Length: 154
Image (cartoon, rainbow, N blue to C red; front, side, top):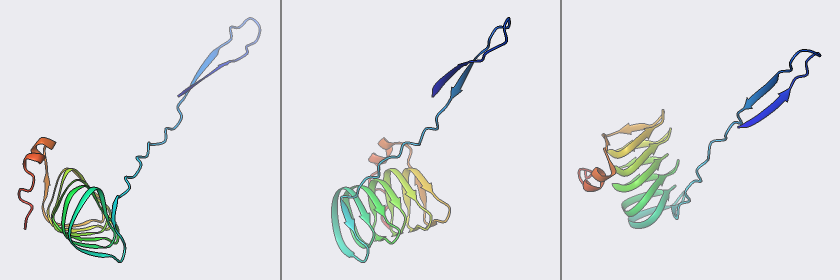
């Protein structure tokens, strides 16, 4: 916000008028820096097995198995994941066959396909997502941590 002050000149004998103009600068929305994935399964890559990931896992290829200790999961536009997983937050742009439990948020972008149950404090689903399963909204972080691993196995 900035202030602009101007005085208009008036003919002799008439008081001059001061105009105070208040201008608001458009504030650019603060862009959160995207978290860089420290583990990536790239396009045209396939992995079967158990992954222990500290931090962010991004799947742009194909993954089938178990994911342990992962804080953030990102399934890219071309990614395919066949697994049940528990994370702090998830961003799904590709295909998921399995259950996702997020102690924070799950965000499903247009074009994503999810076949499985999701449970999270916050669930965001864009128009154009194909979702087959149940959605459970967790009430608080404390409730979420007490229920870890309950009800996600098929």
